[in-house]
Length: 138
Ligand SMILES: [Mg+2]
Image 1 (cartoon, helix red, strand yellow):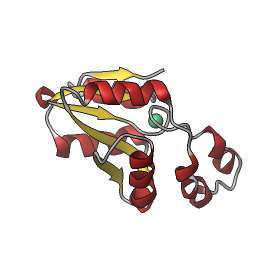
Image 2 (cartoon, protein in one colour):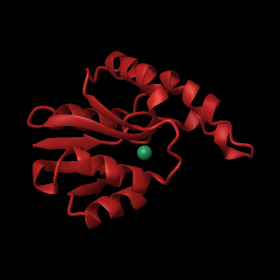
Image 3 (cartoon, rainbow, N blue to C red):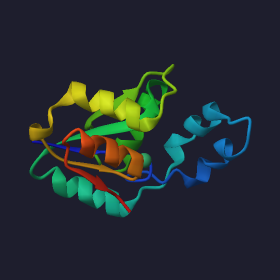
Image 4 (tube, helix red, strand yellow):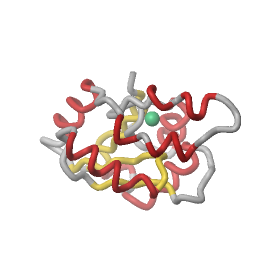
């Protein structure tokens, strides 16, 4: 079975870089360039490490592919190893719920997924509607 985790708002605290996209024009390049400086969310990491005892952990994030190197280095430095990481295509600007619905269906059907943990209620609702056991992280 697979345990799926979101990154931003579950494992990584992105609040220090929100100011880049809080006002228009949004500076997404600056927002994503700063992912390596995110503080770890300890409750999320603890849950990941617990789920990793019994399941394969896969990360499902709305971050673009261009953040992959920084994201994987951050995960390793933060003690979360080298899990498989699914990211959105760099040109893909669709809502996270749409992107994640598509990515998860390429990964595994609901009966192979123990849990999906995400802090976005629109994502949780979309994945739950597909039959996944989706849990809102707070
Ligand atoms: Mg999130």
